[in-house]
Image (cartoon, rainbow, N blue to C red; front, side):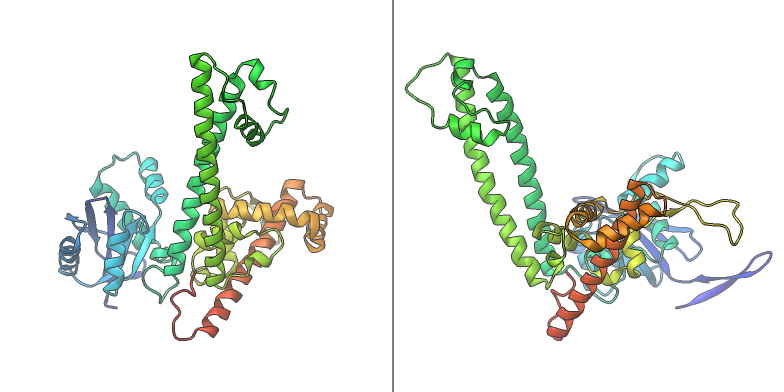
Length: 386
């Protein structure tokens, strides 16, 4: 890598001759900004999101010199096509989380344009060489993994189905409450919605009601049919997730407190575990690693920490459910929790200590599964990184 030495008042600093590129993608266009090794803006331009546009983008950027890293905001979302094109042509592509640039713009009271956004993305890429690889891959791997993509699609589909079903159940509950007393008296005295819908479906349909009640009954029949269809689709998604987790070689579901659906969520959110810098890196990613909060302490004084409210909250939620379950049926988890309580930690702090331990357990299991998958399939490793 070509470098040049820049003299300052007290020391010399090596500055790379390579450029960093930030891309702000949209559905039909993208805006790119090129930074030099000192962080100065070289140029900004917009291109179409298409094969022609991507080729023009690469030709335009490489015209300024060699490129070190490309940063794309939401590389698995709106920037997916651009990221795939760049990865296929051998470029180092990083995924920049949208919240990083949003926080930067709010902090500096700046406006928002595509050019400003691409500049902030480029600065993030240049400042942080440890930004995650595109498509949650490990260094050395390129492009999206097929099994991980399938897991993500089915997982998102199941989440959407659950939200739609819950919305219909809430509406059905309100409609049931609005029915006349003579109809509600024949329904089971059950707070659950499904038994009442089932009983309502067996009503005497020869009876006539006023137009408002008749419409409510018809809507409830429609809701019951839609809920039954969503139930069937959710079961299909769960079956597919189970098959895909086994195809990925995951044994996370063997751990106490992790169901098949939680197994899939961990694989989808974490991606390739090799991209993390060990157990600590994974704990920082999922928010179980506490943040240092010390000030004015000496070398031998205890270091204080505080709760980390950041990180991936979906993985954090899986670890919390895992901790709650293990406290009931896993003696080792109970011992960790009780030991923390004996050291004068509060109940919440003891739970966080247990979650931090379980984060290590999950990470080690993911690494073990990945190594077993790689050893069993040394030639075709496309699905090993899920």
